[in-house]
Amino acid sequence: MNIDSEQITLDKNLVIAQDQPLSDKQLQVCLMGLLGKNRCRIKTIPIRKWLLEYVDDNNKVYHLLVRTCTYLGNPHPIYKKRVQLPCWFNEYTHITNKENPHIDIRYIGVYHYGDEHHGDNIIFVDFKKDTYLTKKGHNSSAHIYTNDLFQAMTYGIFHKEDYFGNSITAIRRDKFKDYLNGHASEVNSLFDLFRQFNCGFTFGQWLNALDVIKEMHNNEWRQWRQAEWAGWFLEYRFNKFTIEQHVTNRMRYVGSALKREGDLDFDIHFDEADFYGDLKASDINQKETPGNDQRNLTECIYRFDKFWYVIYEHETVKDSEATGFEATKGRNRFIKSVDPSYDKDEMSYHERMKHSVRFVKMAIVELNRVNFREALTEFNQGRQPDGHARKPKFNISKKVLENDNFVVFRYTYHQ
Image (cartoon, rainbow, N blue to C red; front, side):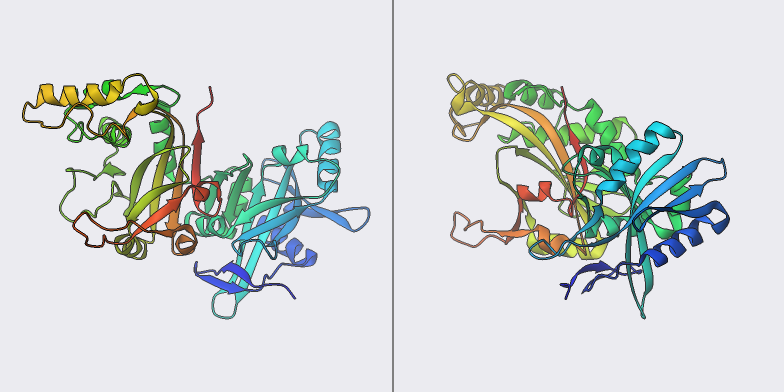
């Protein structure tokens, strides 16, 4: 008997239940009903194999190689599903590409779950075949996650590059024909804003502490003197970008002293979509990064349906590894030159001071009602100096950044 796994209902609720894969006949009826019977035909291939040939309004020919999405089974997480790609998919693709290169071959997964209360939910998954064609000689699997299905139900079309570089698009049933015809694409424009920001950010450049601190001071950034300068630099550049690009009506920095009345204690508010996020700059070698107050974050997810951790990772040279603690001394001397009342000595914060950093990658982790319990672990902070317990916080494990049930957007700098 199959093990229960996560399922997404038609009204976007999460339930734990048995898979409901469609039969070959049901898959064919479903696809032909959506794409039009007059535009489709079933092509049979020897040994009980079939594909669906679809011709669009411009007479472009598609060959859809179709399989169902089902849970991988124990001991895999119950949010992870797969589409089995038999070796004949690749064999057929190689032959057809050579003999009929005009035919657009797609590897399509079909997810189905329905009940008497919600009706049938069907989601299509287009696995870009390029990376799967390299796997020769045996069957392989393409993976899809509960959160990918949830994103498709939310936006209609959701595209991502997974942790292994595979290009995957999940499509809600009502969008599938338009998507296939090239008339519909992903509509989450916030990803485009982060692509734009990343293009102008300092990825790949070594940033020295004193240079960054002086830049933030010269541009009147309120947090310029903070010892954890790398994180404040990220927030400074993000705020600068949103203002200069005139996108503060879509996303704006609300951290530090820039909060407006009613803003919650996070760094970013996405005004149009009406939800919050937090910016994190983290050493790429650290296994975890501190999150936020448990109660505030949980209430935020329930109130606004989702939350984004926007995590930028950097390589780090600690000042203790550099010559003579020059960054520590330079920072404290510079603060003293600006503010004579500054009373810290030259070696203040020398044990934790970063000499230089180089940002190399980023990811957006979405926490929503279907995945946040799995993503967060409690962070034991100990107590305040006066002995009182701190408010409990969540800790974000870096393993989350490798998990495609949580990451909705990735960028890696390539030289």
